[in-house]
Image (tube, rainbow, N blue to C red; front, top):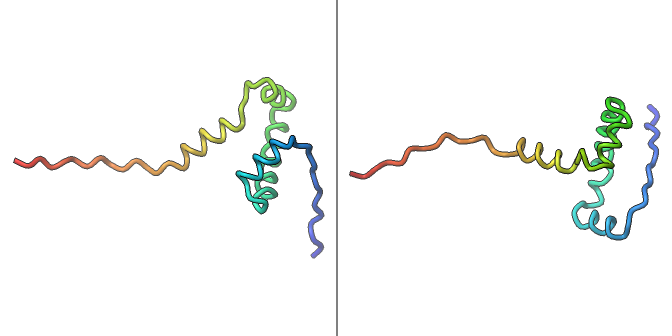
Amino acid sequence: MPKEQRRRLSIDLTEEQYNRLGEVLNWGYKQPLFSVLVDQMIVVLETHGKKAIGAIAMGLLNPAEMIITKAMKEMEPPNEPKRSKKVNK
């Protein structure tokens, strides 16, 4: 079976962006992470078109804030029932 042909996407980063990204993300995680982000962005653009780009550019939609809020909520451990304290008499 022939191997799937892959394409590359190159973007320009500032020196600061490049350094900060390198500090928080190991090299091996970059391709899988950005691949997922591109897939998700395609869905947003197919669904909402240029309005989504405008909302992000204008700061009305903050993908980072949405990811953090949802991920942290999903990753929280389930609430354990509170145990009643025994009172010594």
